[in-house]
Length: 263
Length: 309
Image (tube, rainbow over all chains, first blue to last red):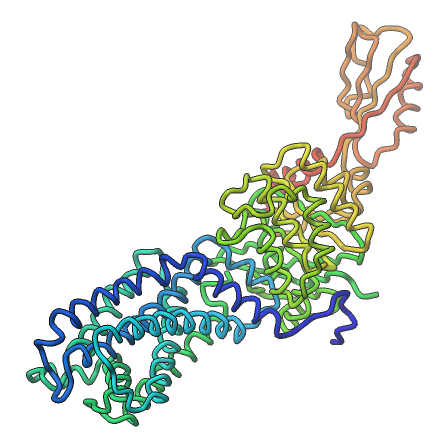
């Protein structure tokens, strides 16, 4: 079909840019809830583990506990906020019926996923960056491989943005949605080595921790910052990248089919 | 000539219940087309399939010659939809939301057109209010502005005046007529049959998922509605005359007034001949044409009686 058939000129990139803009405006509009709250929570963790316990504990040779725990806290902020952004935005749209406003537009499934994902990654990155800036008050990080650290944070953000989309599609109500966070993400983060290296765990917990996909993200990120990790970069990126790809394909399939979005 | 909308053998089931049963119809460009039916008739399901909110079960929908599934990026640009339920995004003001909606359709914001919609729909004083703070009527008006912001060629209005006061309803219909005169095709559903009768060039009636009537509005009303013949007689009657039983005769005003029902399709001339043949002297005569409401009740009631469900 030719564009001259339509009375108004169409810009194919505009639906995507508009949806991305709307998603960014959405979380900026409630910044006290979407940005300030997670930053305060992370700052409290930093205060507890940085200023109070940080100097007295050491779980990794050559590093203070504050230096050890900060990369995990940064990534925790990235992960939680990326997940929350896509999951709450899409679920609210479904729950309140606003999703039909998008379903009747020419926004394509790839544009839909990309806009939601990029907005979530921006929110995750903003929180992660602020947590890092605040953390400089408590400890200095060596940043051994900064590019790899940024890549790992972006990968974590991407992965959890996809997971948020999937959770929003399957959730029946707000309770189900919060269950994903409380009973899945939170335990996996806490058991994934944010607060301790899994090498100090007794058997069989150390072996079981390798089954936790969050471990590879957290360890890979910390490895890139401190230069020391429980596993190699290749394994960390390989496992995390594979999970991210799987979740992306799943989300794309669900949204492409309009599963639980179109009746 | 390409139709604005062409629906072929459209069906849709939900959990084994067939909501739309093999319906076909077409809407010409520039037409105002009414899709009527009682609650649960399948109107909204049909509209949702056209708009893309609902997946097509079986059959085919084409808008301006393009398949609404294969070429959805084109067809959706040509459609503007006012949903039955109020759908708003509480985060934004009217002005922001209108700009965003133009963008979703790939259309750059046109401040003149946006301003015109805002003014015509009486939203000027509320531009900077967030949606949450708008009254029901304002939300409805905003939804119409939102559906028109990308200048669609076919505007779909699903019960746009539900819960709206009379003054606003008249204003909305005037505006709809105006944009129709400028070339926009209109597909509407409404529970206000009087409005449908006044607005629509053609009307389709759905019942239990089926299309049970589709005609030009005045023809449908003429063909199916009963006319009432009111005769004032020179000499009052004491009792009903024999031979008029099939016209359900009634006497009023002490026998000076005779009321007769003229079934659809019956000629008034033949009835008058019969009356003259009975020797009745007529002083004056009046006919009343019942409206779409009666046609609607007659059609949907008929189906119930026949057990055609």
